[in-house]
Amino acid sequence: MSDFQEKQDGYLNMQLLRFTTAGSVDDGKSTLIGRLLYDSKAIFEDQMEAIERASINKGDEHVNLALLTDGLRAEREQGITIDVAYRYFATPKRKFIIADTPGHVQYTRNMVTGASTANAAIILVDARNGVVEQTLRHSFIASLLQIPHIIICVNKMDLVDYEEEIFEEIRKNYESVSDKFDVQDIRFVPISALNGDNVVDRSKNMNWYDGPTLMYLLENIHITNDRNFKDPRYPVQYVIRPQSEKHHDFRGYGGRIAGGVFKPDDKVTILPSGFTAQIHSIETMNGKLDKAFPPQSVVITLKDDLDISRGDMIVTADNQPKVSQDLTFMFCWLNEKSLEPGKKYVLRHTTNEARCIVKSVDFKVNINTLEKNFEDKNVGLNEIGQMTVRTTKPIVFDTYKINRVTGSIILLDENTNETICAGMIS
Image (cartoon, rainbow, N blue to C red; front, side, top):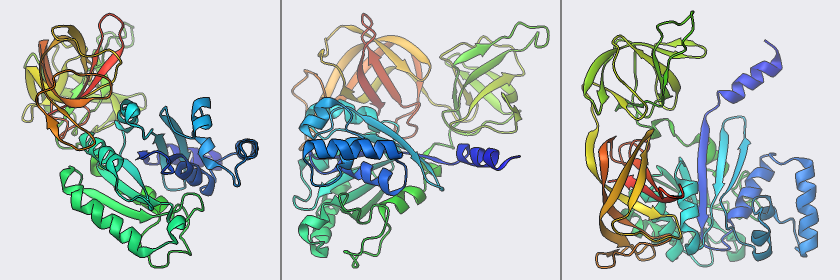
């Protein structure tokens, strides 16, 4: 094998970390990502030259690294993030996908979209302003989406003379309210995204800080246990029948493992029918496997011929999820069209699809104060709360806290096929 092939195989097998950035307007999210890309040598020369020219044209005194992610013309004109910007880069230790999400309240849906698949969330706090309403709002959304790791980056330390007391006060203020959020792992890093202090390289201006840099955290944060390896879940995506002489009797079920570990000879149950069977083999394009786990895409064959189709879920016989036509979930409304009582919507869950009707809006959450409103039942764009729907057929699910794949749903407008709501089953 050539050196190039070895390097390519090593890159493909590296662990992938998805993380999102959030914070108030002008806290420096885009600048931080630009600094990460720049200091980790993930920017091409022509990209850097284009950013330098754009910075000069804007009259900036320094190279504006925020321009690397603020790609929309409106973003560059206003100096804010509007859309979710995705960036990809890698270090010798890990691959990364960054979702740079907006800080404005009116773009809450964009943050929910960008954060929905994240392993970690970087929440920026301006050292001059400390913990503000937006800090709590973004922490609440990260908690709602069950992001396992939160890194509080106290940015713009250069504007407060790198004072340790200011950093410690912000840390204490955040810790005093963090018990409201369902997050197990919270870290704090003092940084200056503009100057690069503690982003990739250690800061000479903050000798009092002996913790890891942001890049070290991102490269070493433990994410292997973030997926559910305890509860075997396999939503069937496609029934594979080649209809060829070589594979005349082959019948396999293609999909992606959503949870747990599957092995040949495991006794399984197919839901919602309740039929039982035994796994014959687990196959990929590279051959058979002796076990499969998330997020592998595989083909499972069974020893018994059963009527299984897209939307069914294969689970182990001794570990079964819930099955119901009534679903209660936390929601974020994503569409300009408000919720219409009595209207039928399309509900999508894993590979399954059903029509549904909203039975009740249980409450809405004021995401700035975190208070629940049980009186106002009108639901519009960017609002968060809890609702209950009834579906036309049984849905096989876990709670979102147990499994982010089998515990999440979306609602669609059946006339326009627009996604109007994201839900986390509670």
